[in-house]
Amino acid sequence: MIGILASALTLLAACSFALTFGGRDERQAAACFSAAAIGSAFPMNGYASVELFILSIDLVLAGFLFWLVLYSKAFWPIWATAFHMITLATHACLWLQPNILPIAYATFGIAWSYPVLFALIWGTREEMHFRRMSARSNA
Image (cartoon, rainbow, N blue to C red):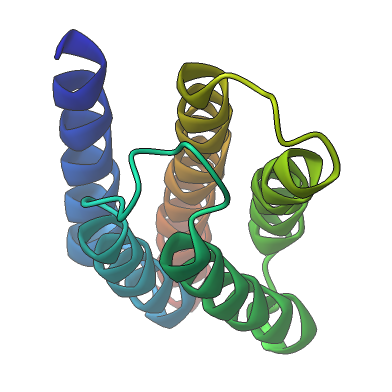
């Protein structure tokens, strides 16, 4: 229960920060991360086998992150995409080794969302700094 609360609070804090202070890329990512978290909140089979719905959400999110890497001028999407790929690898591991405990599958799937969110926070901070420096040079 504490893990779910910590995850939800981290998501809320990171996405609120990005929506408030971030640029276009950070706001889009915050919206996608929030939608993915809401869609992934209710596993269909209790993580006893590969959660296909959550896997599909993770694949769509990976596609968005790859798009962001290609078209963003920021560096943080590369890190966020790399961390998210580990989440996708978690799904693959369960397919290859189906006797993994459900708690391990759920934990690894959730645990790698923290570095993704920290990359978003870092990117938002960098965007704020960039805007501040641009305003100073234009003044």
